[in-house]
Length: 126
Image 1 (cartoon, rainbow, N blue to C red):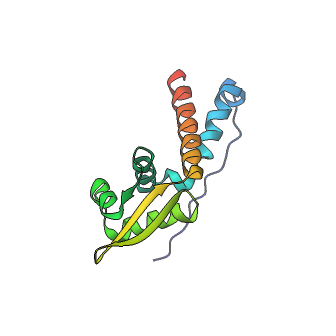
Image 2 (cartoon, rainbow, N blue to C red):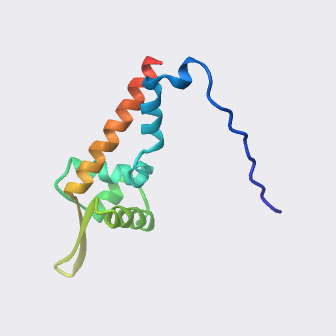
Image 3 (spheres, rainbow, N blue to C red):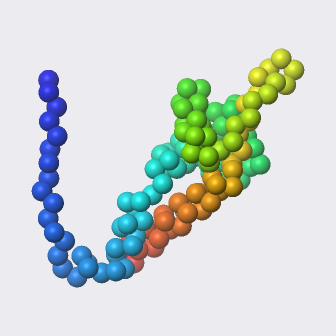
């Protein structure tokens, strides 16, 4: 069965809200959210690391209640973006993977939170 995309015609914005500068910035903030962080599991990982010096793979897995594969994929995406640093070692004969939030990751989280707060403030004023 073929899937067809449904196209909606975009209508030009009209009325007082369409040109209000107060509405434009938060809409832009909502549209321009950091998509690396915005995904639920990645936001949870980066938030947990923001309030802890470091967390092991098992700590994060338990805290977030996610599978090994799910955590691995999301942690790798954060690592590739430079938001998280991953260190692998052994404790005795047991492998240990530890994650830390980088300075870049902390700045990205702060920017993300500021954008979200802007959207929330404007929505409440609406």
